Length: 120
Image (cartoon, rainbow, N blue to C red; front, top):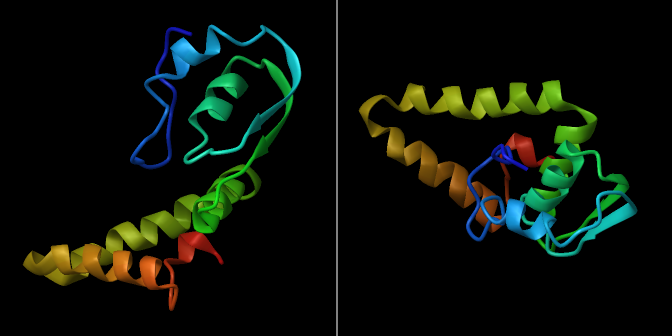
């Protein structure tokens, strides 16, 4: 694998940069990839880019993250539209745009009103 594994968002602890090394230990073709601690599913994405597996099981304790990945597969256009709304919303804050980041982060972390892209 010579190209970089794409990702939706930067994610602490991502295996994206390690994917080429990890894939060296996998067969060229197999039936199912199970990624139990998926995070942003870097390994699943890398395997899918090389068409190595027939099916994928992505799991993580971070439900909003898993839901966002599911949305990326099932409704990519809607995910892009929702992300665009969140991105563009920051500009309504003018020079106080860091406040938008903290608002979105707090909505996400406290579970009261997660960003629309999480759809939980």
